[in-house]
Image (cartoon, rainbow, N blue to C red):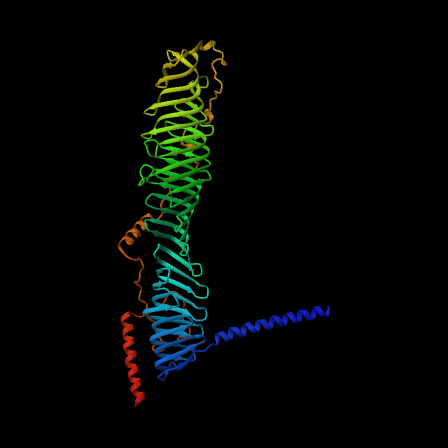
Length: 599
């Protein structure tokens, strides 16, 4: 074997041994930290099960590493490195101060357990109140399991159980957790709060209330610095006028900005509007909304429902120029717009509809269908009255086609512009302005028999039951009449004619994304309503009623002195009456010992 390699291996083993010895010595050194008595007015040796227990009375003071403890009286067992303290118990460690009535301290484990009618733990800015607290002076770690209230500069909080990690600037709470501050009230099963960024993380069914808004989730966060909330798992956000659902919801209360991702549903209850998609963004507390990733909306402000989809949808709430105290909705669709209503269907590149004037604008290769009529133009403007189409303007290269027999005969009408009037949603008058050309089929005994081609400048056409009933021209038209069977297809087909039946949305299934839940479940509704009722009747929802948990047996009364403290959630304890009786016995014992000392 190479000598250098042999020396290196030996040195490595020696270094490893030294490291292990150092670690062991450090561990032993930690375990051997002794409780030191700093002073007392009087003391007395007692025997308990063959062990010496020292009784201290009056201004009793102990030191343990960087921790100092004072009390009125104590029992100390040096063999177990532990003691019990009574009356005005105070634990001080750096900025941390704990007060109570009774204390058991175990120097071998560094665990202090404090009981009392009121146990308080304070640091520079925060105060915890409970009636039983376990605190590890080495780890700077505290536990309570019988209910507690924490007051901080930023919030108040109550819970049944709590874990405070001073070294990590982190606290965790569980069971009936309530967080209250000037901006919001939060109710949850479990909460972890990180001090450095003032962020609370919720676990389990959680409710956040702010003014008239509420949020639900089963996993979420709330940042007190920025007033920002994130909700996941069955999440939804409710306000007076709208509801927002999504796999993830983010809300910034300081700016009014929100977004939702995954299975998004937004319900505008005031305007009967529902919006769906995989991504939604909202500005100004819901006044401006953008939906993307397979979005569509439904508008149910009439007996009929409008279904609309596009690549991107925008819904804006704007102030009315006519009535400053009222608002209206502006709905916009951009890219591959399609919509369906029972009386109207259409496609275009972009659409704009304002509830203020009930006018819809279709731009970019717009096509509108009404019964067996198809109308196209450079742009289409539809006016609605009583939630039904009242009249429409077809501007630039206007063309109207009517399917007379399926896939065979089409009446056609073209012109520079076309105005159409509707009666109760049915087309009844068409006004062609400029370059009018028409091809229309006439019937005998309900069968198509004759086709007429007409050229004129302007024309007015009357329609009833979807059939032409009258024609009026501003000048003598040029007219050619053909028997259907003898008509040349080119002679009876106008330039620009194309039937787009394949593009027509025939039902809501052509608009709605398959598998979308139209009305999502509001999980936890009964509990939410219960909490809303609570918040309407109290100033603060913080719960300060604790389960009373006084001290278990102590060194002075137990059969065997205990050398370890159980840090589990369970504890054995007498009643409140027994605690008061123990205090009376303690005072009587002090008087007797003081009298014996004087003698």
